[in-house]
Amino acid sequence: MNEQIYLILILVIIILVLSRFIVRLYNTDNRKAVGAIFFFRMLLGFLIAMLVFVIVEAIRGNNVLKRFFGS
Image 1 (cartoon, one colour):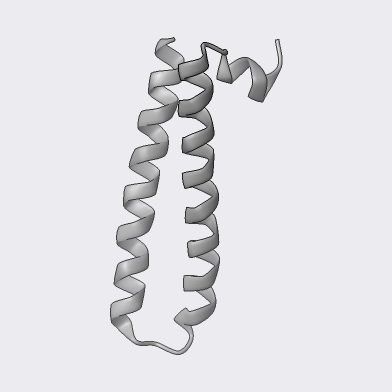
Image 2: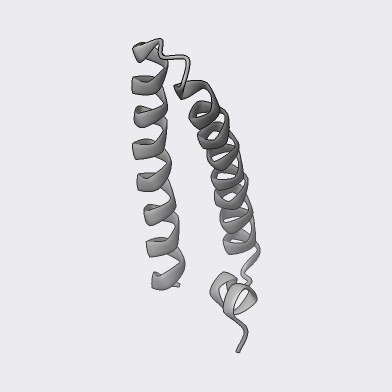
């Protein structure tokens, strides 16, 4: 159970750092940053979906790390 909490905390920290980085890229108004913004927004969406999946599986009582990495 502790590993799942650590995984959730790590995902939340990564999401916060990535979202702050995306906001900084938006504020630069650089044409070359458009591709990076698109990529990082897709990555942010994936990480949020992964976070929701981990939380739901932890609430159900399943071992999330076992699902990711096997036995």
